[in-house]
Amino acid sequence: MITLNIEPRHKLALFGPADRNLKLLRELMGVQIFASGEHLKISGDAQAVERCVAVVSELRRHIPRNGAITADDVGRAAARFAQEAEVDGPLDVAISGRGVTPRTPGQVTYLNAMEERDLVFCAGPAGTGKTFLAVALAVSMLRRSRIRRLVLVRPAVEAGEKLGFLPGDIQAKVNPYLRPLLDALHDMMPYEQIRRLMSNDVIELAPLAYMRGRTLNDAMIILDEAQNTTPSQMLMFLTRLGHNSKMVITGDPTQVDLEADQISGLVDARCKLSGIKGIGFVELGRQDIVRHLLVQNVVEAYQRPDKK
Image (cartoon, rainbow, N blue to C red; front, top):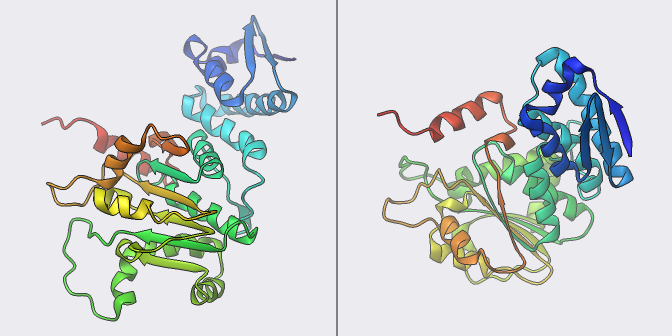
């Protein structure tokens, strides 16, 4: 057990209303926390206690600058220190010299689910890292020879506007739909390496329609924008899972671009498969958005009931 002395003027900001922040820390860090007067007692696994002390220290430094400490502040601080123990091993991917790691508790849960399960569904708003973290884990697994192939898939559905006839061969026609996946890869690997791996069929980018009739073994298969699949397409895709493979399905149920009378395959699958053992379901929220702060505010604004 470790006992910390807390300045009386910082107690309310650190503990939160009705000790809300302490309860959240207890849940996120896996320790026991007790407030007694001006003392904070932390007990549990030695490494967990050490990480929790580091989180509390960071939060205390936060108080003079910002005053109050929100649940989001606690979650981000906990994620930064928890990731050292929980997910430091699986990823060896860097962007601009910095390692790729989850930045929120929800992202930690998501990455752990992908490590532990062969089939994972992840739903959440834009900017929560659904696709980015899946691609990062896949690149790491390729480097560690845990998989032999990476298959990135997207349905070719236009987002609310008709593009009309697209010139070029079939690759040129589907490239606009697959570009976001390629952008994520470019952040983690040199262009020449990606081109070489694609020419050797180690990395494949394909529209969903190309998955029919295939069985994918020793692979990581990622279906992005899955909210734009139909139930029959989703069934077709899920049955492509082969031996020693992992499959990750990501999407945002609030951004369905199907015709009004069509049911989203992502929503349908989450209802039908929720009771099956071995399948992981992860829900990311506004608090997990790691893009520009304005993205959080935009998502929140669009989720409010229409005043009209």
